[in-house]
Image 1 (cartoon, helix red, strand yellow):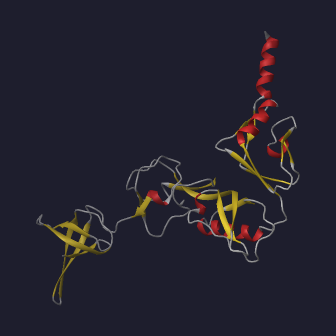
Image 2 (tube, rainbow, N blue to C red; image 1 turned 90 degrees about the horizontal axis):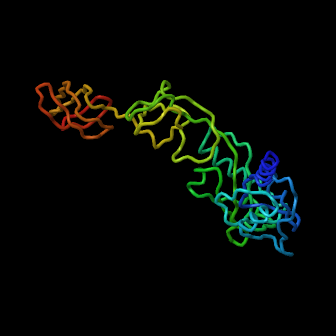
Length: 289
């Protein structure tokens, strides 16, 4: 019984997950071996042969996974359907890397980029001098993506990129309620890996006070969509009401029954309980309409 258990255990580890298959690889030699794709398998065996003269090659990921399985090793495909192989070249992509770095650092000043990889989609012998990369507007939303350059013939040449980076992001240091004001008391700065954000992460307290649009749990990364400017007039606050009659200006105190930003029209309540419309002209200052 004990021997059977050991045999089953050994079979389990023999087919244990080795690594995650990537979508793009480069090659120098046309023969692709298991160790060229993942490092977790103990055996080294041939995966495929790139046809002669081919600088790019595409194969169904399931075929590669089946080859590993037949050799006693399981790999994770995640969402990879096809694997692309591109022949290595002496292409200097450092100018493109610098352009990409500049874009990310501009979006995230606190970002620290550890590695940045760029892969041409297809074999490219060279790129034009001073080639300018064209990026989508949402290129900095996640840590991988696509961009292109124009070659000397005006043809688009596409590149895939991936980066490993970290950045400082404000996190909620306690449970947050809607309309709470963002302060150093309810937030703290933490360094986290950069993957993908739904919104632009906040890395510092703004000089203009902001409040939360929604509730947040403790230790949640704070992004711009969680915040809104703090109204300069809050509901229930006392406001100085200005009334101009010709050259004469009269002021009195009333209560705001609504909140609002600069130049918003809100309702105020006078001391006699009568209500009127007023335009916000400053912090806790309104002008009777």
